[in-house]
Image (cartoon, rainbow, N blue to C red; front, side):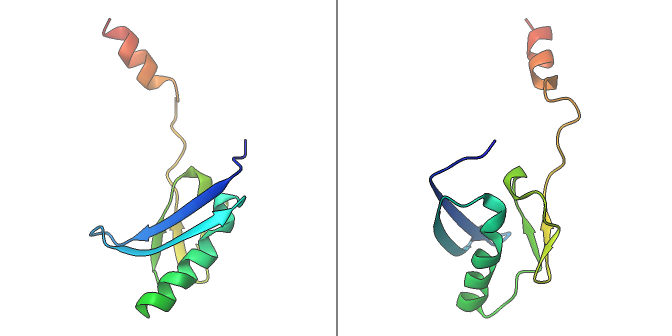
Length: 88
């Protein structure tokens, strides 16, 4: 499933400081990583070592030396529903 429309990529430090923000038109999430990282490098003068993203960034493990960390898919996506139903 793909989403279409404007996307915003925000890169922040582990302490919450926003290092870069870019908007993209009709781009797949994974295609925005390189430009976003280049912007942060231009602004800060430093290269990002590790980037944590959501599942939309899956498919790339590294971009220009930056390690891309993506969460694993849940083992059972219906687990939260099962837990909720068992409490009723």
